[in-house]
Length: 112
Image 1 (spheres, rainbow, N blue to C red):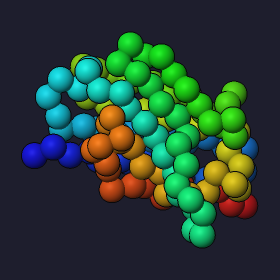
Image 2 (cartoon, rainbow, N blue to C red):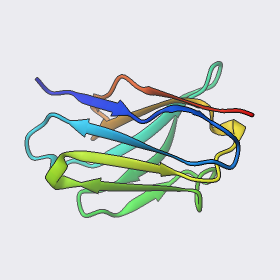
Image 3 (cartoon, rainbow, N blue to C red):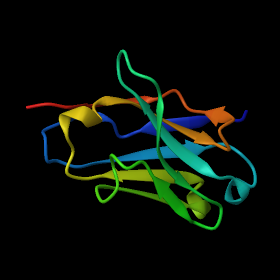
Image 4 (cartoon, one colour):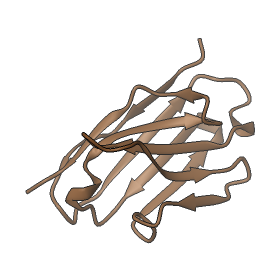
């Protein structure tokens, strides 16, 4: 069964850090481009970060310099390291492969 499972979300104070993980149950994981998205209540879903099959990365302007996306092909896992978190980062975070396969999401809440 093709599936993505995100984990690592939770409650963190402003300025803190969290690392999200996305484990993919797919074959040939190394051939996929992976994305992290987020959606806050009342807002559109936005692309946060992307990592290509050759590890080229792209980031939304709002997270550049704070978030790092990486992948471990041996573990079929994509990571999103989030640093210097702000209240505006509060959202449900989703991972995807090729914008086609999606995980269930994990909640990140940044609050004091």
